[in-house]
Length: 90
Image 1 (cartoon, rainbow, N blue to C red):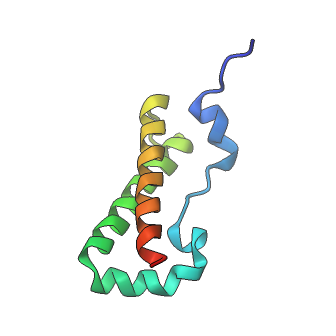
Image 2 (image 1 turned 180 degrees about the vertical axis):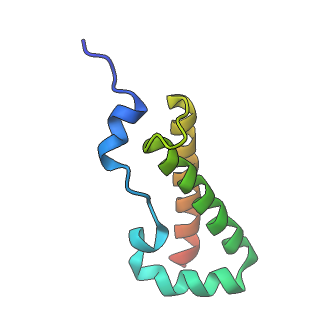
């Protein structure tokens, strides 16, 4: 039985940052408007980008971290993205 690949092994070839405007282009204009008009959305948006930056830096070994920590950050990024999407899709 082979060992499960590490976080870095799994994602080194897919270390493109997950920018919201690129992932959700149909909502790019709405994101810009909500960042200005909705404090809660703006806070979530900023948190997403901070976590996303940390994930990207871990995936590219700019700031290496334990696999478990990187995976926790990825889960947090997905949680934030889901919450932002829920607001955008209303």
